[in-house]
Image (cartoon, rainbow, N blue to C red; front, top):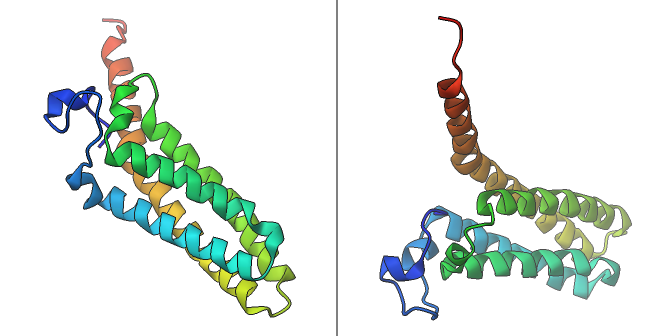
Length: 162
């Protein structure tokens, strides 16, 4: 998912242009990002209908997730090989979990039984579960592979007493 250096080498799309990677849109990562987008939008709408003081958190998470969805769906992230994309994506998910847990708890506490705030809190906890699953999958698939490769490199370069 994160490998590769150039869009032109894949044969997908003209150089300098954008084309959607259909395999990404149907992949697990594409589905998770789409679910995150939908849940962020639902939470935003629920907050618009009830407590307007918590609008920023789901809106920012929606924008960040939309940017990552665009980058991965168009394979535009391959044009910036200096970024460690799995790590950046992992940090996006972890920060979203922290922010949405706080916002969901605050919305549930301040709701006073108001339907929109209660719904936003419930969808917020569902979004926390989706972001947590995404972070776990990124860690398991990408970051743990990098750590094992580094450990193998360190073990192979160690010249102990003979």
